[in-house]
Amino acid sequence: MEGPITRTLHRLARKKAAVRGAEPLMLELLQGAEGAEVESYGVPPFRYSIRRDGEITSYQVLPDLSTSEVTLLRDAVFEMTASFRVSSVVPLTFTRLIEVLSQSGVSRLAPLRDAERVRALSRLAAFEAVGIPTIYALSLDDSVTEFYVDAANTAVYLDHVRYGRCETSITLTERERRAVETHLDTFKGYTMDFSNPSLKNEFDIFGRRLRISLDLAPLAVNSFSLDVRKLTSNDLTLLDLVRMGVLTSESAAFLLSGLEMGLNVTIVGETGTGKTTLLNALDEALDPRLRRVYVEDAVETKDLLARGYHQMKLRVDPFERGAESSRTKSEEITKILHRSPDLVILGEIQSEEHSRAFFHALTAGVRGLQTFHASSSTQAVRRWREMHGISRTSLLDLDIIVQMSRPDRLESRRRVQAISLVVEEDGEPRLREAYAVGKNGVLQRVVAWERLQIRGASVAPQTFLEKLELLQYSFDAQNTGARLP
Image 1 (cartoon, helix red, strand yellow):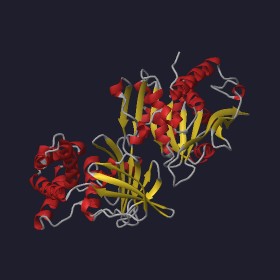
Image 2 (cartoon, helix red, strand yellow):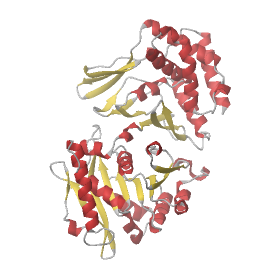
Image 3 (cartoon, one colour):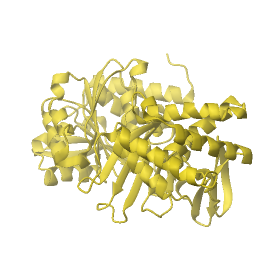
Image 4 (cartoon, helix red, strand yellow):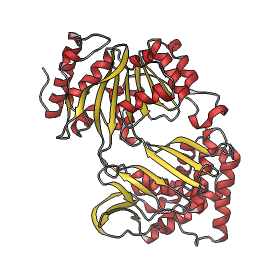
């Protein structure tokens, strides 16, 4: 792994040495945006601005540095890349690489004297040195949830928590595109080539977790496409989601009661509807003493070990690797019973192979949380049955399906659209909605408790209703600040 990193940094150093002081930093290439400013806020060493021009919402990143600071930063980046030795990075991980380079920058930026300023600029210098400063600048803004590049010479666009889809004038340089490829290739453990032109990995950037997905030719028609998802939205709790109107206190209590009774909960929805955010919130709200086993390719679940939760996490190869994979999700799902889980979190069920292994586990009594890409609960069941060949009997083990939606694809709002139970009618699996969004746009219960089938019963068990009532009262009390009895 030493070769690619060393070559990249030394290539940057040689290029800068030839024109020392002439090559601009990323922040010197940033441009303003059109339109009237709606909001402006800062995260040192940048300022972020939201602007509107007609129906177009633009997002602008500008450096918040003096001329002397830019000069000092440029010199620090040059010296860091020229003197870097990969042997100084132990263990050799992306996180440790950035830490070592950042520490190296501190001494070179010491003339600034302000400790906070030195720290902010040394971190930026580290990302300038490894060639991905734009990713760093966008990662600093916690209001940005995901950003995209469609082709080599097209501008970045992004999703903002308050303003939805925003355009930018930021374009990745060739240097930055190559650096993204190098770091994903180096730290994922296998190489991109003609037969494997996609990579996905998670990077931790000073506490901010990013999931970076990269596609190159021949898969990417325009030779380069990038999707960077911020995983910080997973910090939202179930109470936060209730307060935001994603779901109601009663429906949140219904899902928690079901999970605590040992029912399985599958969250379906299209991309970007908040499936993983809800999964994490439910996971965190459950009893910490439960033994949780996770099987994920991209680790998007919360790390709760430090808070006393019992978590065993397994990372498998991404689905995109296909036959080359040595650690598949399907294989680990089939071995899950040997790990004695109380709750299994499978992340995303992506393929027919995943589905078959998942339903095999359900048949064996495994229950937990997972997500599945479908526009509705009905479509999810149809896809499993008609495309993945899952039997009618196996579908009854699904228990509860939650449908997420994003009412306006260009806005930021997400919500639970419906919660359904999978019930049996005349020997066939049927979806029975327990909650659905009404004409008023609010999620509400649409069926009497007596008509719900829970674990095959025609009447909901009294213990379930008692637990639901207590949990709902707890949510309502926390939401209003009332004192619990």
